[in-house]
Amino acid sequence: MKGLSLVLLVLLLMLAVGEGNEDPEMQYWTCGYRGLCRRFCYAQEYIVGHHGCPRRYRCCAVRS
Image (cartoon, one colour):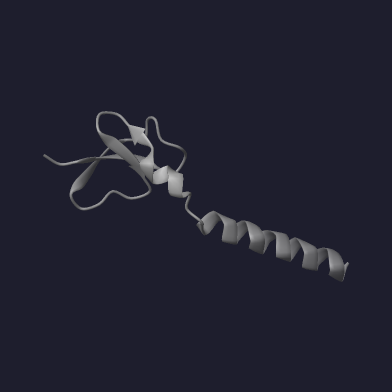
C-alpha cells in the first residue's frame, strides 16, 4: 500500500511540474486581427477575446 501511494504521489508531482512549462510555440499563435495568444496581455495590449486561442489563453492586440 505504501508503494502505491508513493507512485501516485510521484505521478501527481510530475503532472504539476509539467503544467508549469509553457509551450514556446504558443506565443506565436495568432488570433483575430493582428492579435497574439498569451496567458496574460502586456500593459500596452488589450484583450480581444478567447476565440482562436487554446484553453487558458486569450487573444491580445496592441493598443493604437
